[in-house]
Image (cartoon, rainbow, N blue to C red; front, top):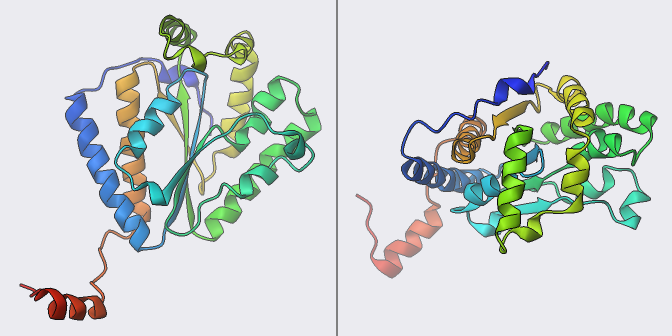
Length: 260
């Protein structure tokens, strides 16, 4: 996919009541998770994007009504010494969802073709090979029934600077700002080039990218949740299974339960 990130910079506001829209989507996600559990589905949600683009805020709203026993959020940071000694995908295998699980990666295996490429943490041969390795990795998950939903949250430099400034001004949020935020900011053009290659090489029919305009925070959150709802409605059977006959017999004899 040839993606021009400048097409996602309007920052348009959500056309509706945000609180009502958010609650409706969260309620629907809770219902879809029940179907996801009952039908033994497995889903991986990949959250990529610029620093301060709103990934964490979107994840927080996405999971607000979910049963915590059946989802897991993995914040992906720099690899450990042990992880560096292995293939770059090694540390992601144990973060994949099993049946009934929704796993969310806050940053991901795409670090190989983004930060590791730009910052020189791997060789050119390694990041170039990474495109095919990532596609094969994701294809294998699809073959066992894993639904992959990939997001990239895009913000302009002006929006990023605004968010970083606001975080620094709030004592409860200063911890979110790191030296890496400023290091990455100084190499924006190099990151844009890497992102262009990433979209072109890894937008596949089994794991397509969805770019979100993150320049309006509320609209971005609604867009992320709306897309997850749409994808789960398409990938998970929408029928609740019939109640187990044995359970019904127990309910009848123990509770005096009667069906209509």
